[in-house]
Every structure is written in structure tokens, then in C-alpha cells.
Image 1 (cartoon, one colour):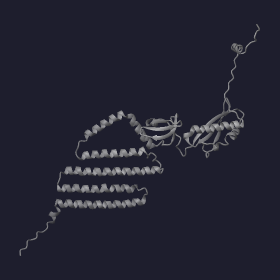
Image 2 (spheres, rainbow, N blue to C red; image 1 turned 45 degrees about the vertical axis):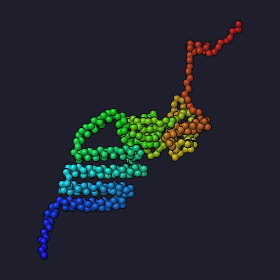
Image 3 (cartoon, rainbow, N blue to C red; image 1 turned 60 degrees about the vertical axis):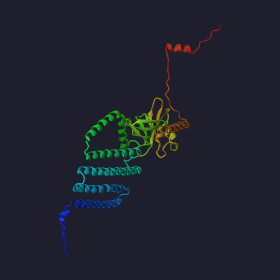
Image 4 (tube, helix red, strand yellow; image 1 turned 90 degrees about the horizontal axis):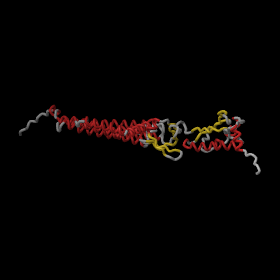
Length: 372
């Protein structure tokens, strides 16, 4: 019986096989990806033990897929270089496009998670995050997507060898034209971003603009801010105007209490102690005023008509300034009348003499009538 000789296995030739190297590279990439996923899972568990908001957990979970995909794509690129099945430039561009898409999607989701965490912290009252609400969150959400999309398109065009210089020039010209045509709108938009970031006012605050307009902020938009006056009239103020005008926020500070000054003048002959005993009792029980903040009666000095005083009280709601003035002034008038104290007013005596006085006297005082 004839026996065929068994050929010795050429190990070096087998290891030099491109197919075996490609397969080994893919298997190694899968193992590395699994190791990275396991490491990230452990990091997730440690982060969950340290923090309670879950932001680190979500961010690390979002990074697992793009990191694993990156390892696999690198292995595929290396395998393609060994096998030479397709054009290497085309393979690099295709795999690079996959990486751009995967990482862009991960970045958008990560930005959404960060925005959600910031909004939750703003609702809990964390300092410095008052601008994270409503349209501000929507704007950041939109801008993140636009930036990621444009950056991804640029990278894809570079990967496929497209000429991006013409696109850059066109985008620059279009941006210059739009900026010149909509400079007022852009100014209002930039001012809105500064208002959200600096947060000099918030929705619900009572403000005074340039000492002339008073009202409550009802909405802060990207073009204008809406203020509702005490007369029930809504005024739209361009955001660029708010960036240049003097704004007094009566709702800012440790509390919303705003001091009112009600001045009045009484006749001579009264002392400040007497006036305090007459006016101050009963102020704490008046509506529209803060009962926990004591009222003051200050003597401001004499005038030509009498003694000038000022009653200082605090409003409970800055938006009801006119109502508070009405209540305080009415209390002053009632208290003075009950005590028999008269308000002083200016009076002037006019003395007329000479020929003009004689003519006026003759015209006003009739002479004796003659009998006919």
C-alpha cells in the first residue's frame, strides 16, 4: 500500500497570508472593542456611585458605540490595505464617512443630555443657570445641530477629495450679504444671547427702562422683549435697545420689596414727633404694603408753605406701584384729617397801588347813583 508523503505545514507562509492577517486583525479589533465596552461599563458603575444626576452615566453610555465603531473601522481599513479588494482611497473615504456619521450622532445626543441636565439644574434654582429655559434651550439645541452638521459635511467633502474652497467663498459672500441686510435683526439676536447669558432680567421681573417705562417682563424673545405695563398695554422693546438703555430691575436683590416715598407738607406749628404719632399707627395693616418691614416718617425740612415730611413704606409687589401709592397717600390724608392737621399749600398776596389801583377800584366799586 503506497503512502503519500505529508507536506510539512509552512507556518511562515501561512502567517504571511493577507487573508489570515485580515481575519486576525478583525478578531483582534472585536476583542479590543469588547474590552473597551467592558471598561466603560465599569466606569459607568463608578460614576453612578459618585453622582446622582446620571449625566456621567448617559455620556459614557453614548461613547461606547462610537468608540467600538472606531476600533472596528480601523481594523477594516487595515484589512483592506492587506487584501487590496477595493481602491484604498475609496475605502478610506467610505470608512471615514461612517466614522463622521457615528461620531456626529453621538455628539448631538451628548449635547442633548448636557442641555437636559442644565435645564433640570436651572429648575432646581442653581445659580448662573437662569437663562436655561424656553427658547434659550431651543436655540442652543438648534445651534449644536447646525454646527455638527456643517462640520460633518465639511469633513465628508474633504474625505472624498471634493474642492471645498469654492464652497467656502460662496458661504463667506452669502454670510456677508445676509449680515449687511439683516444687521438690525442680528443685533437683536446677539443682544438676546447676551440677555440670556448675563441674565439682568427674567420673565416675571418688574423693570423700569430709562426711567420712563415701567412694567412686568412677560417674554424674552430673540428679536424683542415684551413688557406689560400697569395700564395693561404690552410694549415690545427691541433687545438691542435693552442693551444700551439703563434698566432698573425692581424684582432683583434678596427680595422684591420696593420702597415708596410719599411726601406731604403740613402747616407750621407741628413737631416731627407729633406727626409720627399721627401717621405711623395703622401703616402696617395697609394692603399692598409689606407688614414685616417697618415704615418710617422722615422730616425733610421747612418750606415756604410749611413743614415737609416723607412717609417711607415698602411695596409687596413692585408691579403694583400705583396701587401702593394710592393706599399710602389715602392713609396719610385720613390720619391728618382725623387729628385736625391741615395740609399746607402755597398762597400769594398781590398788592396793587398807584393809578392802576384807583382805576381798578373805580371799576369794581360802583359810585352813588344820581336821581334823575
